[in-house]
Picture (cartoon, rainbow, N blue to C red):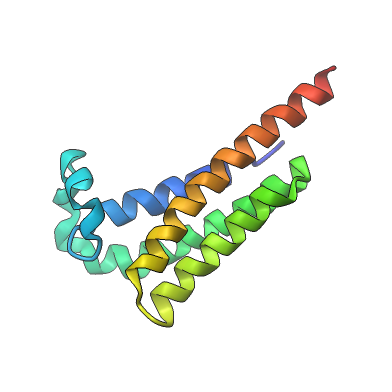
Length: 126
């Protein structure tokens, strides 16, 4: 059984958690409110400290697991550098720009891994 969906769960979960915290993430405030995630505002501290970092780690683990399936280095490097950039921006310097770039980088790495896995599956079927 292949667990290639883990990186997508981690990256999308990271994005949704960020959208649920409009005070910490002003760029995502309108999108999160439009999706109804503003209802989670009372639990913003819990979301940012106990849900956000583990989802970043899930995305990092998913990038590695997906790499083991398709053996393409670029999605792995983008995923790992994006996840580490988020953790650095969150724990070391609290820089939102690093975290924004990291979140979008995780989404791009997930897309790249998905395309690489699809190509690998197509090659294996032929």
